[in-house]
Length: 121
Image (cartoon, rainbow, N blue to C red; front, side, top):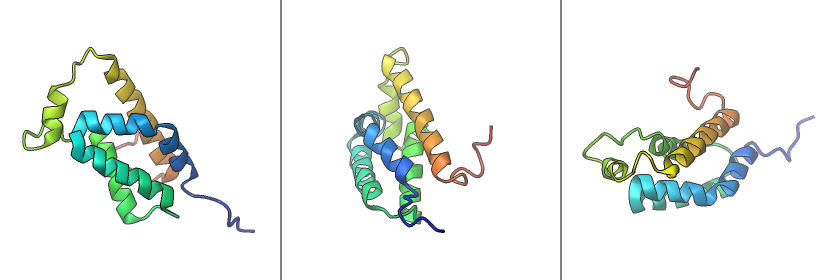
């Protein structure tokens, strides 16, 4: 029998609820106010989404790119300036790494095809 009460995004919602403040702080630190606004909208979208759709997947991937510093070396992007301001010896670096790893894990558990090309380890 099919369980209609099953929430396919339960773990993702739970992760964002538990790490709401850390995600917002990371977005502000790594991408300034535009990233913060984008991720605040993502938090709202996750709370309301019945399932993973293309737009939500795109926004989750954008947060992953931010956390993994995908654009930190592109001088035409704000992430480069934000990244340059971070002291590598700061304890926040370890916190960001742990948040990123946990986020990546929950993305894979939510949809094992979320990273089909580059996260096989």
